[in-house]
Length: 273
Image 1 (spheres, rainbow, N blue to C red):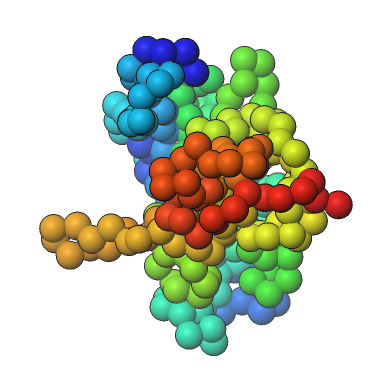
Image 2 (image 1 turned 45 degrees about the horizontal axis):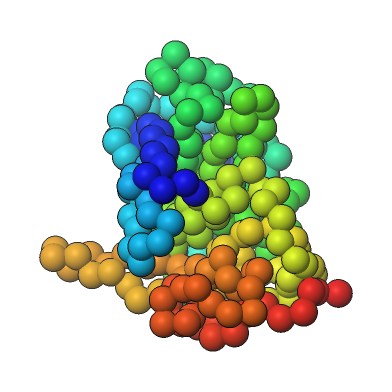
């Protein structure tokens, strides 16, 4: 980025209620229609006074605008609610078919809110509360679970990201805002999903080979130090890989690390095969 470059975008926050139609196969004993509160939001990243030679930078999300409540009724057979008790979890979790969710976000939600400022100059965040996605389907034990993703489409490109705020505790190495840290970090580094890197993989959530600057994927399930607020609430934050891990034999990051909490002390190595 150029010195003193400035990129400003809107950070907004929407609130929605996701109504899940519980499937008959494998669903919990919850009522046929269970509501999960979903926070649907828009966010933007503002870069200000970035130095090409300095050792410090700051990336801030903001400002924040709250829009009207939205309601999404998931079609029958495309969403289910499950008890997490069999997995030593807390409460219930909803599973929505990935394509159904993505079609709703891109085809209904964002166009409906265009008059409220939703558009390519901001970043819609759909923050789900104990709701994940199956790809395909709504089973908790098969083709599950996508906890979040970031996408882009159209011209000019509209970026967006559904993500789970999890309090069930059934996903190892994940808690409340760790998925948000993963997805927002990746959106900042690779907003369109096509920033190329040498092939890397067989680490984190990537079982094969991948060739883009997805800074969260190599460390999925690895937390950075948790942030304890003055009121005692604890935020969970995922560790992210540095640029150098993907591209360089030497680190340009803090302490010579290749990730922001030092889990990676070497780069990704030879291209993945």
